[in-house]
Image 1 (tube, helix red, strand yellow):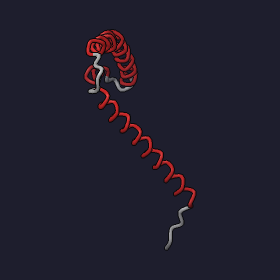
Image 2 (cartoon, one colour; image 1 turned 45 degrees about the vertical axis):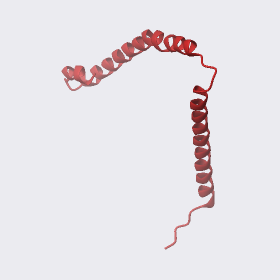
Image 3 (cartoon, helix red, strand yellow; image 1 turned 135 degrees about the vertical axis):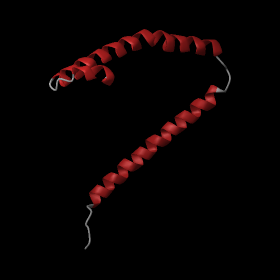
Image 4 (cartoon, rainbow, N blue to C red; image 1 turned 120 degrees about the vertical axis):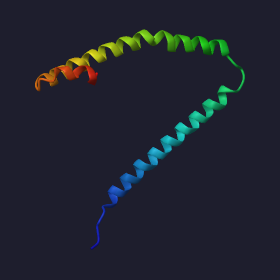
Amino acid sequence: MRIKIPLQFVDKLGRVLLNFLAATGKLGLFAFETIINFFRPPFYGRAFFVQLIEIGFYSLPVVALTTLFSGMVIALQTYTGFAQFSAEGAVTPII
């Protein structure tokens, strides 16, 4: 028995695969160029570390608040769901 596959399906699948491979190749080239240019002069060591502190360290309060509120929402939703089964005590281990 022969299975008929429409050519449009194969064409579309091939295009999706080729687009994916092209995007992956572009990303790989971008990463390679980034690594090469990181070690090429001029070096801005002080500016790099200033930005590292500005972006990384000073964003910790925002991350902490986001985590806190996300945890509260998850706890509330879990409690609401577990209350139907009288399993409110299981909220803490889940969170």
